[in-house]
Length: 167
Image (cartoon, rainbow, N blue to C red; front, side, top):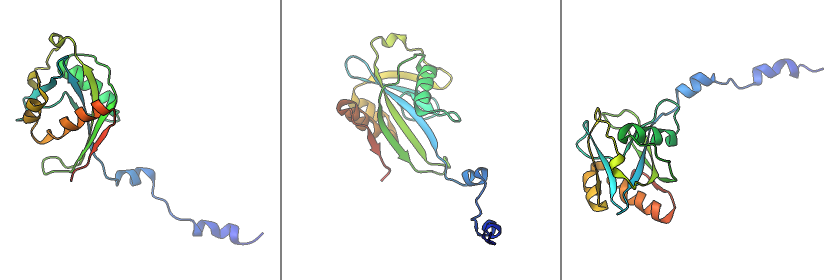
C-alpha cells in the first residue's frame, strides 16, 4: 500500500456547500399569462389598478410554482375562470430595472377562445376593467409590453413558440 491513499484528501478540490452555491447564483422573477380571444379574434386584456397600461391576464409566480400553474392560477384569480392552459406561445426576458431588482422571464400560453365572455368575473381588488380588443387596439393599450402580442399571435398561428430577447 502506498501513501497515495493518505494524500488523496489533500488533493481533492474543495466544493462549496450547495446552499452557499445556490444562494450566490443569479435569480429572476417569473411571470405567466394567457392569450385569450373571443370568437371574433379579439384579444382579452385586463386593466390593473396599479399600472397605467393594460395587460394580458396573468401574473407573477409563487415560490416554486411552474409557469403553467402560475398561468392557470392567475387566470382563475383575475377573471374567475378555470381555463385549460394551452401550448407555450412566447418567452420574453426583461432586464432588471431600478424598481425591479431582478430580471423577469415571462411565459405566455394559449388560453384559447372564450365562447362565453359573460362568464368573466373580474377580481376587483387589483383590476379596474377588462375588455376584448382588436389586435391593433390591444397593442396600443399594452404599453411597454406591446411587442409580446404580435409575437404571441404569430406563435398561435404557426404553432411555433417565440423567444423575445431584450435587444
